[in-house]
Image (cartoon, one colour):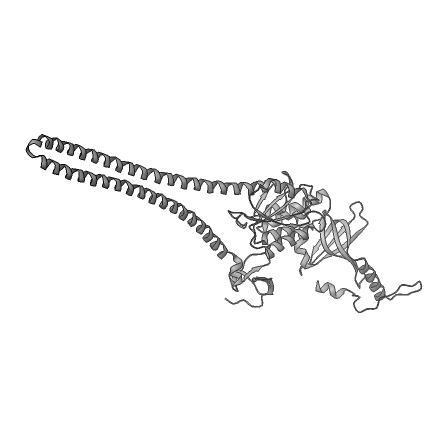
Length: 459
């Protein structure tokens, strides 16, 4: 790119050249005049079929496009090193494309288009581009299940990425159910020239401003490859991969497939299917809570039943003991009555003593009954306290899990001053053996990103 800039005749600092009928230009003036005219057009779009591609060792590329209906008209296009990585998968001979570019005339008289963006044109080209990008990202490991982030067990807050005027949002909300979920909607373009940039910006905004959201949901209704081309772009795929928040996609209808679905942490065929998944997850959690509550009730009932049997057994034993006492004293009374003629006074005394003993035993029996009732009430109270304690333990367990999960957040480690160093292929550098002198590396601190050139490697 720098070498190419040296060949340019820029117009900065130059006085604008006016055109008159008898004006005679020098060659330099003519080229400068033409480039001034080009700059007034701004960016233009040109459609053509790729006929030749030349990759330069310095990282940039020249390719030629021609009209698909004729061999007579063609133009050379220049693609800088910074843009080649994003659009290299489209540079295939025979591919029909649309380039967004700035026209330029060099001082040697050569004309070319400086390309800013490349898009496939037509159903056939879109399919070829889809397969090419799919193979490229598969080689980079974007589709690997090991790379994808696990969804939280308990989804409470959702970041919704879609158009607020689309049909997808109504289907999603209708099938989500009323479970107290918090939904943050950021209106996003999902079709058209600005959809790709809009989707990437929304994902980055949620990661920066709402990092505590449980999941991001990217949805839209169905369409053909032209309608869904924003979801088949490398920039959207990278935004999904780099998101710290797990992303669920539901794009199109049953038959539709997109690159975004392949790289998402979880994908479904439709927005309705995404809503049904989140709804079923919440219902499963509710069923588990209800099941645990039923188990607690059963445990409490078992405790009550067990203690009731204990009290019943004790009461039966007391009654049997009382009956035996009555039988014994009845026998004694009979003997005393038989001895009345010989000692009536002694009988009355013995009877008085027996009456007192009987009163005392009855008092003890009554006291025992009241004590057993008190014990039963105490056991009931302990059972209720046990149930409250068990519920509090479950709440503390949930809080502990939240704390552990927060401590595992990579962002917390980065806040303490650590950084992640990786290469252009996004692979993390774990030792000096992974880099070479002259290689470009990237450093990810807590905020921002640093690009660095390796000048020296020490073991």
